[in-house]
Image (cartoon, rainbow, N blue to C red):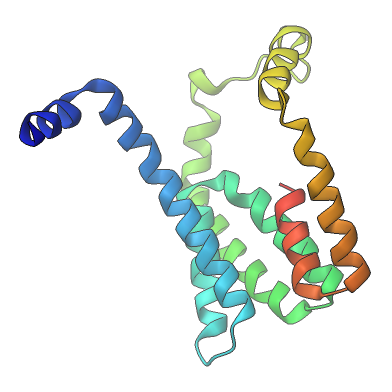
Length: 169
């Protein structure tokens, strides 16, 4: 029975689709976790690791820039400008490595925008997506705000930094 279950599982289309999509997210979570670890650890190779992991995080998926922007805001708040320098260096290297792909992305006809304010998106799609995303999840706002208030009251810099990383993106 176990062999037939495994054979059925690995040959079905929904499982293959899920496995393909999840692989990229697992990489992003791993790299983001590694970046957080190296930001707070002390060691000889720490700065090089922060630059390399920032590069890999941004090169693997450019939308991770939101996470990096949150980290940069946290560094500014904590006055850790030395760490801000290393993350900025990794971001710059990722931008240089990604720059040959930008003209191809900009000239792709499937990615052409419908203008700055496409009214169908603002009037129909955005409310539907917002309602689906926030359905009963708006209760999470209160514990998040409470955590931010406690972090600011205690002024533990690590807690405030993590609040910046989680809230800004």
